[in-house]
Image (cartoon, rainbow, N blue to C red; front, side, top):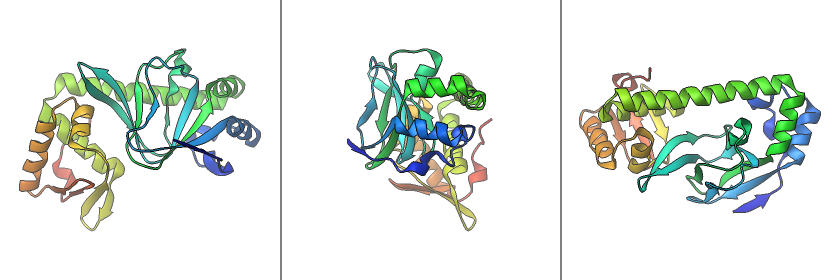
Length: 229
């Protein structure tokens, strides 16, 4: 873990902070620092004080809980996203883990009390935070619905479609996703097994729906996978 000096324009294009004045952003950044994490490093852990907000600047982070001797990934954080927001709902200590998924993961760490103070002073900022919490809740509800209503194969294929839609780059008629998700990570986020993930990917590869290796997935036809509903 390495702490470095933060460049000033970090929040300029982040929709969550657009309601803040320049002075308010400056206050936020004066109480923040950039921390660089290596792969597998813990950013926070359960039972630690929930006294910081985090914004991912680069890399990726997984938010997990431990259940029955395995990880369950609640969601994966992408650059620009806020995480570690438990203090906004009154929690004083953490209940989950945050792990860096790759080397040179840069995280902006902001004092939670400054976050709360600005939300009390600035109604637009408070509204943006409320909208963010609502989206996070809807994501959690959708994950629960998938586990209850869909079988393992459907959940995996839906997640692959989501990866292609959210992270994919068009390459001719195909869609390329560069990622750092292991088969176990995909299993943890879909509530399935690593063996099932491998079997589904191999089947889709045989059917020429996609090609994959450790760092990328190339979707020949993204529309042949079920879309999230």
